[in-house]
Length: 324
Image (cartoon, rainbow, N blue to C red; front, side, top):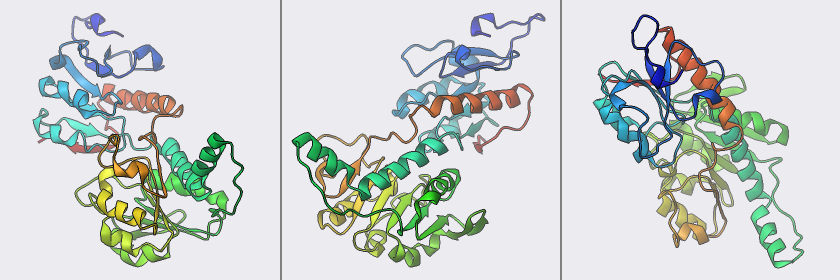
């Protein structure tokens, strides 16, 4: 149902949902709600004050996402399509009392875990070097490290971290070690607390970062963290750029002691001429862990489920915080 058809048979106004995709692209949306399409463009589809459920556009620049929130005086749900919601948290204090912010836990598991594995394999097997050799028309043979028999440390063992381990399973790793904010058991084995990192880092050949960006994890990978990694180890970041101290990482890369494969950087976008572009032993992708063909089917499923709950006034999934 479009926003223009907002009145039901009784003349009452149905709740209005702003969607970042045309509603016809999502089958099975509740018919008791009205829908407006907005993908972050300069023109709003309706008065933001009419919006009850705001599904945030999936764009890299947070400014368009935040812009209408100040005028959404009756919004009850802000639904992100990202696992991390650090870019939306500043707006929570201005939301109407009781409004909830939900993340997209699970939406990007498959795509991000797939990229984490691709970055790991590409860096270990020196795929960028082979591409450069192909461009130069050169046949460069030689031995490269394999993922087999390597010890992998996953820092941030939520749904994405678990999905990364699922994809590591066939590769005959010597060991996969899991770290999260606090200790717990998982289906694959124990999860260590983040306080255990100093003792775990020296034994890891590959360290994969999949943690959310919080005050606790901002700058987590600092000079001390990197110094504890073994010589020749690989750092893979599919989390957020500010989890890593860029200056400290550059020092290790320039020294040739560590290598890195980064889907996220600090700053981001990485500007032309930044030293990370030309640092030795680094592979960079432009924050593409989420955007893949896996995104739309999972985004549609998440929105359909959340909106069904919203229409029935049932508890929502993935609530991060409520406005007070």
